[in-house]
Every structure is written in structure tokens, then in C-alpha cells.
Length: 400
Image 1 (cartoon, rainbow, N blue to C red):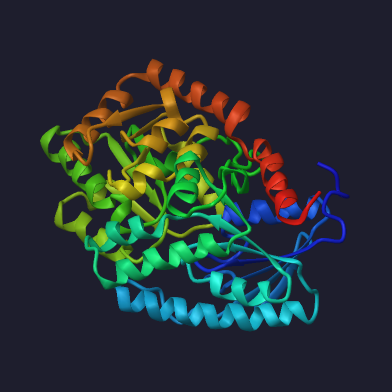
Image 2 (cartoon, one colour):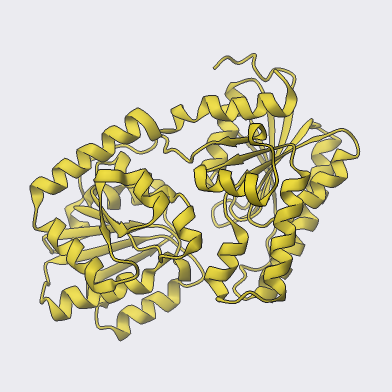
């Protein structure tokens, strides 16, 4: 990668659901583009620890807007997205008349940013769609119905792909959706995986105090939401503690989300609160301490159409740190982890628990699987392997 590749090119990245630099994928993309010579501006929401309306970090100019609520219901999401769209457009005008941009790089969810893209395409701007989530499947996973809002989401997805000059997908499943459901030409869809940044994910000595006096620690990092299967994991913990009488295992759950308080309450009701820590959203140092101390890591994502087709960043982060994994047998999860993971029956908390126990009781398997995962990330899945693909997508968008 040379710094001259993007010289003179200006890009505006719009992301709605997380602030920068907290959104790791978008942050890696931003820094990669800067290193290639692009002038990068980013519009994103404010969040805890990221309250400044404007700042420059590593030559990335970040413009943050307020997000009045963190939605749960369908109506709440509509209000959140409408507010975000307003602020995204207003801040895009600010960028246009100050730094300028030649292309918009829009990151979903939601699939509403194409409205801004359509406006700027009238003035010759190019539009790249960065496909993070398959929103029809996400809506179905969250609410379990295909109603009026579901149909609207399907229409928004079609319009997003129709507007895009180029699309980047996080895996082959998403690429097929862009081509088959979105109608995009295959040569305009590029797979750019969310590979971990190995300069950030450092293997460090464990912090024994995180085990709270138990022999083993099981780690989890991710969102505390319905489709993430935290309720399934807590039922697995109940089975381990109360049915299998294993009191030597502790669980460290890192992450925030709309269901965090509900999951804490559920742990109390199941009688396992003394075996689980919910840290909430924490700095990287605390996250790395938990994962480096963990003997194994878990991904309890519910087996559904959404999760089957989605690549979860936590899987590759676990692998980068040499941690063996237990998860349900999902297409993209298996593609990422391969032999670095054990695979439980779909949504079966008892089988999930048995896999955890079996792996903890087999130190040789843990070591072997951890080494397999680390090698796969280092040789194939780390972000450095995705950089040429991202830059190729930009060449297709703006010309070489």
C-alpha cells in the first residue's frame, strides 16, 4: 500500500450505530484509507466516552451528532433512525463546504443512508455501501414477525443496493445477497472481512483475580441483545452450576446493550449471579484482560437466518488471542473458526454447557485449538489481508 494511491481523493464515511473510534471495523477502514493517501471525514453518533462534536484522531476528521435514544421497539428504531438521518445530512453539508468529499461510504444499519447518497449523486458524488448487517433478517430475529415494518426494511435494502455504485460485503454470504437480492453486478461487490488488528489484540499475562477464586474462566465479548443468545448462555451456566454441580467455573461477560439489565436480572432469577460478571462496555485494556485470562471463550449467538449468514468479530478476536471457542454450528461462524471451535446443537443450552465442560476438562484440546485459531488469523483473517480488497473496492468506485 502506498500513500499516493488515494492522493487527492476525499471520502465521507457515515456510520449510525456506533461512534468512532469505538467501531473497530470502520476505524480500521478509516486508518487504512488515510494511510493510502485519502482525505477521510467521518460522521457518526456520540457515545459514552466519545462526546466531542468534532475531533481529529490519526488524521481522521470525526464529526459526531447526538443520538437522543437507544431504540428497542420498531417505533423506537424509526425515531432513532430519522433523527440520525437528519444529523447525518446536516453534518454532511458541513463537511461538503469545509473539507469536501468525492464519495460517500455508508455503513449500515440502518439502510436509510442511501437517501443522502441519492441527493449527492445528483452532484456527481459516488456512493459505496458497506454492508454490515442484513436488516430484514435482523428485524425478523429481533421481533419475530414479517409485518409492515419488515416490508419497509426490504424496500430500503433494495433501494440501498440500487443506489450503490460499489458494495463491500463482510463475507461470501453477504456478497450473494448483494448480487442475488440486491441485483448488483458481481464485479461491483467486494468481500472485505472484519479482520482483527493484531497490533491491538495483544497476548498478555492473565489476571487471576478475574476468576474470583474459581479454577476456570469462560469469556464472552459482545452486545447484550436478544439475538446474541445471552439468555441461552445463562441457562447453560445454570445447568453447569445446579445440574452438573460444577462450582469451579466463572463467566466474564463484556459488553453493553439494551438487554444488559434484563440479563443481570435473569442471572439472579436463575441463581447464578455469583458465577457471572457483567462488566458493561469497558475500555480495551479491561476487555483484553478478561479475554487473556479466559481459559475458553464462547459465542452463544442464536441459530437463526441472521446469525447464520453473519461474521462475528468476537470469533476472530478470540482466535487472535489463542482462545478455543464454543459456539452453535452456524455457516459463517464455522467458516471463521474451523477447528478452533467446538460446535453445539442449535440453541441447545444443555449441549452448549456440555461442550464448555468437556473443553475445560481437556487442556490438550484447548492448547491445540488455540494454536489453530491463532495461526488462521495470522495467516488468513487479520486485517492486513483485507487492506488490498478495500483499496480495490475504492479503485472500482473512483478509478485507479
